[in-house]
Length: 251
Ligand SMILES: Nc1ncnc2c1ncn2[C@@H]1O[C@H](COP(=O)(O)OP(=O)(O)OP(=O)(O)O)[C@@H](O)[C@H]1O
Ligand SMILES: [Mg+2]
Image (tube, rainbow, N blue to C red; front, top):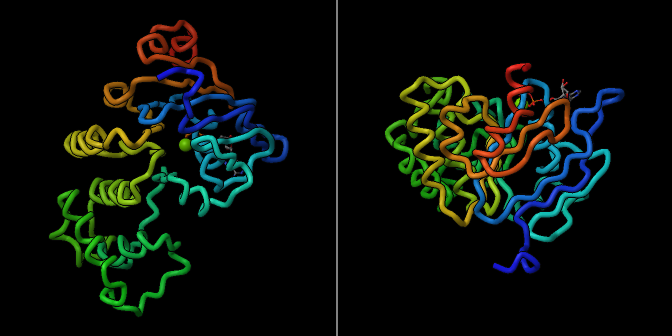
């Protein structure tokens, strides 16, 4: 493709977020191509999750601009951004513990937050969505647990459900915030395979501390530190960059 014609999936320019005196992201600029696999790394508190929150609109930015497939979404609500093809998973699981797996997925498909859920409605009330919810659970091998309470699931199973729910939206850009955190080796392999199987229509931007696993999935890497982009580029070049060693090893 002629680079002059390229429409980026995501184009972030001079993005900033401050919480009072604390600057969490600082003049962050980066571009993601359609279908790209990008890994975001950086120490605790580097601003990685804040950057995701700004991209989705969960947090309003202090300054800068965010474009999604050429559309300026900086002032749009999270809901509008989702409609333009943006989906995410959270660092902390957001499923509702005291409800069944199927009901969680069904209501998730409706784009409802737990606070808006009406627990007394049977799943059948939602008709086709219930069928879709069961299809999603089947895709991640959890259909047999559809009627179980989320609280009875293993942590890795909850992670798989969240990933499947995000993918069900058929996003053009998917943000994954530490999808491998807290997983056993076996669960990590399962989730890694799910991520590797995401279709190329979807650009995947993943925050992850488990570099052994995540680097395999990445084509490009961005290193953040103290809210700033320190290194950004092709995976092997970023890994070999002395600045990356400096941040991670302090040498
Ligand atoms: N809602 C908030 N209010 C105030 N400060 C915040 C808020 N969210 C994040 N911060 C601060 O912004 C900085 C960046 O936090 P952020 O969660 O983005 O880091 P992170 O790179 O995702 O770290 P981790 O790897 O630990 O998840 C931290 O100093 C954090 O305490
Ligand atoms: Mg984080």
